[in-house]
Length: 179
Image (cartoon, rainbow, N blue to C red; front, side, top):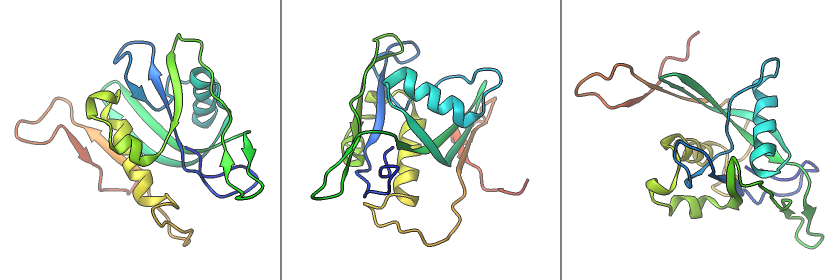
């Protein structure tokens, strides 16, 4: 996500998506993602994966979402795209061009929230893509009216119960934030 350039220019709020080049869900759009390497922090892993999959240098910011799924835990960060240009007339940040080698990602692009909202669920790699983007829009998007008010926004937390409980939704929102 591009909440503005590192020098503080206004946001374009473009969202970086990659079209998956590997299974599962090959050919579907998703947020840059992958597994952490030994010895790296989750933020370092997020930055490395974004670069490997799209060529984008990012600076991970606020922890946006935590999804606790069978066999994996996903940590998603809102991030600033490093580089690009700033339009002198408007001050708007134009993020840098993206590159992929066609292995992990077939292509990468910057999308607006409305472009992603218009995508069918089957165009997205996983439900967590839409969950995270919708949560970001509701809690952090300046285009949607968010201003820094000093309020603390908890990361969205969702858990998939395993094994599934008959008659209950497959995913539930965590509501107990006590540790």
